[in-house]
Length: 168
Image (cartoon, rainbow, N blue to C red; front, side, top):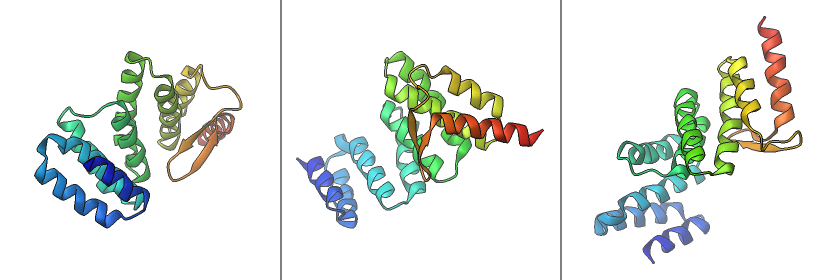
């Protein structure tokens, strides 16, 4: 019930109230600590406070309480905050966990985002290697890049090739 109220406040965009309720709930129900932290990360991202969102999920990761979705979200918000190396580290964990848990959506998304980050870091060969690993991505598939929007896999491949050529 308490978590549903937080979700309802978020849905209604009553972020300050949701954060206040999160603080109260965390104090009253220590057993919900990590679920509350997860909700706080959603609130922060809705307010475009990516550093705070990353901090919430990073605390969960450090406490070994993060699930596959938490790692993916943490990587996405780190990417929004310009923390490319941190996002890359978490995406590599998403790839491993996604493989172990047979979660194709997370794996495919992580491969594309990892390719994007490698491109941004100037690691063009690595970027292409990650794109080539995504068997589920056809030529017309797209994925969401935080702060950029949807990106076609073919467009990303072309951009990697263009940048690699220009870097020569």
